[in-house]
Amino acid sequence: MIRESLTDHLPDGPLDVAVVRGIDDRLRAQSPPPLPVRAPTVITVEGVPVRLHGAGDACVLWIHGGGMVLGAAEYEDAFCADLAARLSAAVVAVDYRLAPEHPHPAPLRDCRTALAWCANRFERVVVAGRSAGAGLAAALCLLNRDEHGPAIAAAHLYYPMLDDRHETPSARENADAPVWNRRLADVAWAAYLGDGVADAYAAPARATDLRGLPPTYIDTGSRDLFRDEDAGYAHRLAAAGVPTVFELVPGGVHAFELFEPEADRSVATEARRLELLRRSLLEGFRTW
Image (cartoon, rainbow, N blue to C red; front, side, top):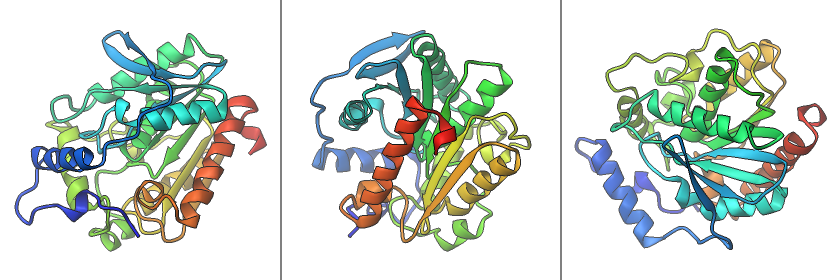
C-alpha cells in the first residue's frame, strides 16, 4: 500500500509551485518527520547552511529531494542521523536554495560549496541523494570534474531526476504514476530552469561526455517516471568507462522505500544501499 502523497491531492486545474508547496505543507503538518536522536551541528559555509551528523574520517554529502522546489535538509535529520550511526561516518546534508526563487545554477553551486567544505575536512567523500537530490548529485559530479575539483569517492543516485525532456517510454507509461507524476515533473523543471536553457549541469542526461566521473550506483523502480532516463544514464556511464552499478527494483514507484517502507523490495533496497555506501566510504568502489 502506497502512503498518501502529493499526487493524491493535485487539483484538476492549473498547477504551479505555490499550489504544490501548499499541498506539501499540509501533508507534512499531518505527518511531521521524526526527530533525530541527536540534533545536528548546523554550520553556514559561504552563505550555505549544512547540517552535520555524526563524525569520522569519511563523509556522505547528502542532497535532499523535492524536485528542486520542495523540501529542506532539516526534514531528513532523523534519516541522516541514523545513516551516520549505521555507517560510523559523518553525513553532511546541504540546505541548498530552491527554485523558482533561485533557479539553476544556484542550487548546484550551493552543493558545490558544500562539497568543497567536506573535501577540506574528510579523507573520503561520497555524494548521494534521492530524486532531484540525486540529479543534483549527478550534476555536481559533472561540474566538479570540469572544474577540476576535489576527489569524489563515489556517487550514489537513488531514482535520479536527470532529464527535462520526458521523451522515454517510461515517461509516457508512468505519466500518471503515484508519488511523482508528469505534471509535477513539468512544474519542477520549469521552475528550476527558469528563463535559462537546459544544459548538462541542469539536466545531466543531456551530457555528451561522461568520462572521468566517479564510480556510480543508480537504482530506480520499474514503475518510476524516471526509469528509462536512469537506466540510460547508467548504460552511458558504463560505456564511458565509469565503474557503474545499476539496479531496477521490480514494481517500485518513485520513492517506493519512503511510501511503502515495510515492503520486501524497500527493505532489500535499503540494505543494499547501506552496504554499498559502507564499501564506498571505507574500502572503495572496487569491492562492490
